[in-house]
Image 1 (cartoon, rainbow, N blue to C red):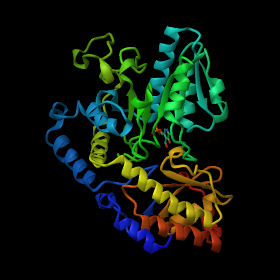
Image 2 (cartoon, rainbow, N blue to C red):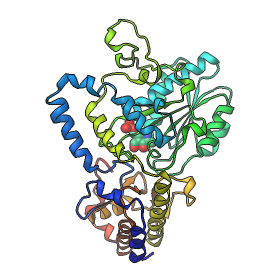
Image 3 (cartoon, rainbow, N blue to C red):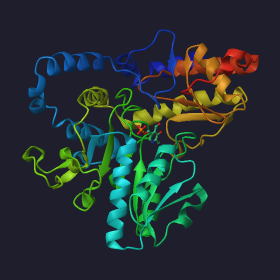
Image 4 (cartoon, rainbow, N blue to C red):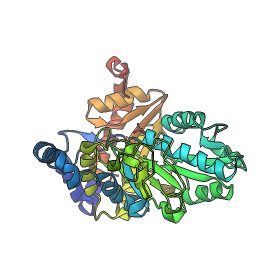
Length: 408
Ligand SMILES: Cc1ncc(COP(=O)(O)O)c(C=O)c1O
């Protein structure tokens, strides 16, 4: 691909106008929107107003003017991006905390149905928090166990003792994507529930939880949804489970009547029971304005552009001699691309020094997020050229690029 060809793709790109809706750093090509999404311009104004007026002037009155309903309202904005009904999604806490709530709830429900169902099955190499939280969740439920196996052994790990299959839909390192419908069916055929971590899927690829018949899901607000650093996360519970699953972190915001101030807990109906404490209003405000950008966006166009960006960067990485660890088939991957190289860390640092921001995942992965709303084809072409130059010239060998940062 030439620069002229990339520019021609930009000229014909229906998503090109979206780029200007985000703050774009001077001389920066940001390929990390799969880790921290870019700042939407509208968020500056919206959060400023939230702080100045809703908090500064309206103070506590704002709870009755939109704050108290924000978790459900913002959840409803995420629903179309993940194939859910508006009343199947709520925004709360972090992905880690939501995982804990759903895993414990699923384990307790499964044991009520059949005491022999006590195992959570997950994949070795899943995102660490999913495994760490699952470890903590099984420790909180008498008799429960965690079974972590390689991807190839997952099918055999499901059986009469399985309560829950916990999978990350798009792998954080390799971008490999599970067949959601197929694995949901496999879990359910074994009598288990399935919980999908959509952190690298929501806003990255088309997701249809209800078409797949999924039971539970969680995901991050700060990646492709552009909710800002540490944005609150979402959780999904299919309608058929909503009365049957209970939040183990039973706090007053999940109570049927929080302002009844009763001593005893009575779970709210629907998704509200998944709230625990007071919602993070500033975080919700930023996420809400990030999500507003998705209104009217055609996910088919996002998917097509992601594939086009991927092809350009894949060609560059391959020309630079890097080994691509992401599947070639677009339906088998998310919207990031990862390469393996013995000097992955140094190459990423050399790219950052030139204004191309990707990230490094231990031990040897270079990872680049290809976010169709914020990037042009020409951006990806230029980043690819820099990657080739850095590798071919050995520029990455400069000693300063070997200095390890705390966050990689
Ligand atoms: C698959 C996956 N799950 C969960 C998380 C993070 O969860 P939390 O927001 O609770 O830190 C990440 C973060 O990168 C992730 O990639």
